[in-house]
Amino acid sequence: MKENNKLQSSELTPSEIQVLEMIRNKRFLSIKLIIKNGEVDTIEGLERLRTGERIIDMLKQHDFQNLEIKQSNGKIVCVNRIFKKKILQAKNTKSC
Image 1 (cartoon, rainbow, N blue to C red):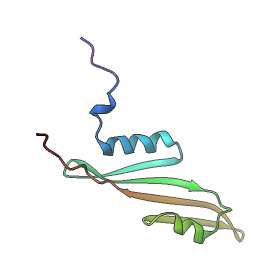
Image 2 (cartoon, one colour; image 1 turned 60 degrees about the vertical axis):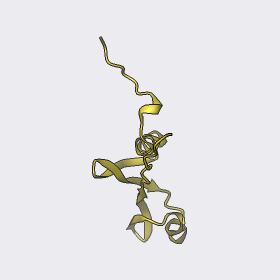
Image 3 (cartoon, rainbow, N blue to C red; image 1 turned 45 degrees about the vertical axis):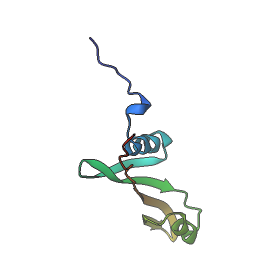
Image 4 (tube, rainbow, N blue to C red; image 1 turned 180 degrees about the horizontal axis):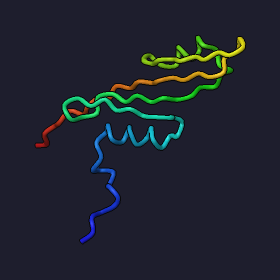
C-alpha cells in the first residue's frame, strides 16, 4: 500500500504551518529553524529589501532583526535583513 503523499492540515503543528507559510511567501532567500526540545522555537528568514527605503523605516518594521547594508560608490546597493520570529508553542489542553 502506498503512503499518502500529502499531509492533511490537521496533522500539522502550528509551528509547521508558520514555516510552510514563510516558504510559500517566496520573499525569503533562506529560512533557518532553531529547534529546542524537538520543537521549532524560532524561525529566521533572510530577505533582500528595496534599497530605496529609509534605514530608520527598515529598523521600525520588526523588533528582532539584523540588517546588512552594502554600499558602493556612495550609494546603497544591497540591503539584507534576517527577520526573527519566536514561535509560541500551543499548550496541551485536555478535553473533558
